Image 1: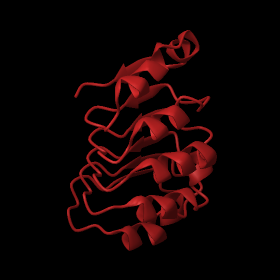
Image 2: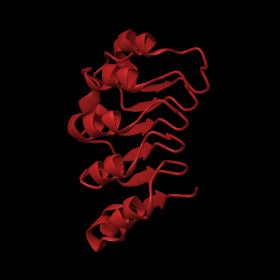
Image 3: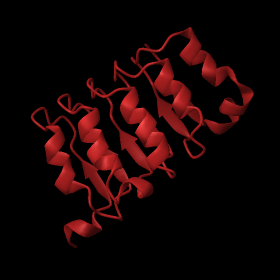
Length: 144
């Protein structure tokens, strides 16, 4: 099986992984799961490489847990580029704010969202109090 047939990529706890490393790794149209948990050097620029790739429209699961330099810019692009995204963890992405949460609330395919430790306020949490949002999400984790 060649790299073009990869379905899942897990770069968990790769503390020396920088934005540019992602560009050649995400050209597979079969890629559906990306786990970048604890890749603390990644920024919105690195996530942009993923979201500008052919893989973006096929991604169903994305974990950016503790990618502390990722913020609302990535969320905005993600909402526009990943129509099949059902699972998203942005836990401890401290640069994700109420603005990003509001954008995520409009994503029609999203079913699970973890926003633990994000910089959201009562307003951001209140977005999910809307009955239409509650019907959409099967699981929402917002422990701070």
